[in-house]
Image (tube, rainbow, N blue to C red):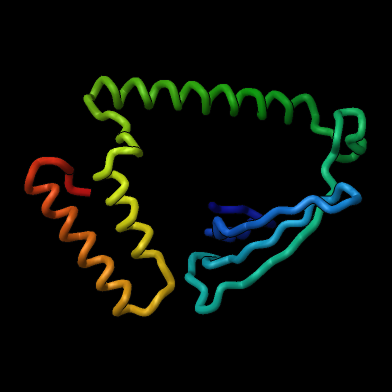
Length: 149
């Protein structure tokens, strides 16, 4: 995910972000930043923050109330994204490109390969796991039961 803050780009907030609601209703969240300003960080940097969510429309402070222009932008952006998703799905279907079945064993295997490559573990263990799974995938491709990923 990419975030823009003060005209500087912070990239790739990790998907390990956690969120917790405290007893007083505040929401605390934390995670790590792995890339910043176009560079991969040698050491991921942890962050933690807290905010108090607004529970209903009437509780929005005046200085945080979106303008009518802001509301129109939100609504129009949502409509555009919805129509883009529909058009993309229709175009892909018309081109004969179908969404892979996530429960297909071959797709599960391909996902496992990708996930093992991301693991933080000793290189020799990772290499052995990858070799076994890649061989199984190669065998399935040769038998026509899988596509090259």
